[in-house]
Image (cartoon, rainbow, N blue to C red; front, top):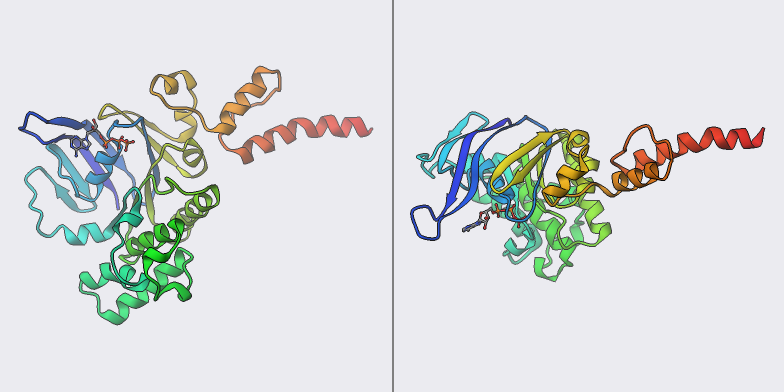
Length: 291
Ligand SMILES: Nc1ncnc2c1ncn2[C@@H]1O[C@H](COP(=O)(O)OP(=O)(O)OP(=O)(O)O)[C@@H](O)[C@H]1O
């Protein structure tokens, strides 16, 4: 599902002395089925932008088109439910939204609330739990007895049980350990690749941008200040630093190696790509040593 923002601005508490701009004149297209990352320093408008992608917030001015639905400042809140099922939003610390007595009930709640018959809702819940790696032995447990990482997975299963076309993720791995982070990011990548689910990811982790995103939006002070593929976004470290952003570790390391004289042809963004480039340089040298 394509999403198009056309000159969208959003003001929190508009018309009060506490009014503050969340978004300022943002125009952007998020292509159908893409994997898009949104980066920017704290308070730059990333979460505000995300909430426009499933009409949780409506623009103060401008329009948002989500698939074939147009959302304007005047759009009524009625009939937005089907849209929110198609565009699943995983909030920061999603586990805080768990509330049911059992894991199974929590995940089935969304589809049931949407009028899906009990049996099908449970089948969807089981499928979603399987996708996130929660095995049947946990179905009858209270979600609150699980580990933090498992709770997060159950909350994500709740969103997946709605069979969304697009998954919006607000720092989904915040607070998880490295193994939990990798597992979740791999899950999203698999959903994207194998099921064609579009992903919009807000992250402060430049490695995740380099490893997974096809397209990047950079926010600053409510404005969209740059957009493009990761290689383009990460091509100017000085510009990134100006906006309190950094390079992925592999790119930083590659620059240091190059400064020390290693003739790297490109600045790779991922550890895998860096390893391949370094090996390609070392291999002929090693072969020569053996002759
Ligand atoms: N509920 C609110 N009421 C008033 N102002 C808000 C509210 N939520 C956000 N803002 C303001 O809107 C601007 C954008 O905030 P937003 O949360 O979208 O930024 P962000 O880039 O997601 O930040 P972070 O990385 O910390 O999550 C900030 O100036 C923020 O203070």
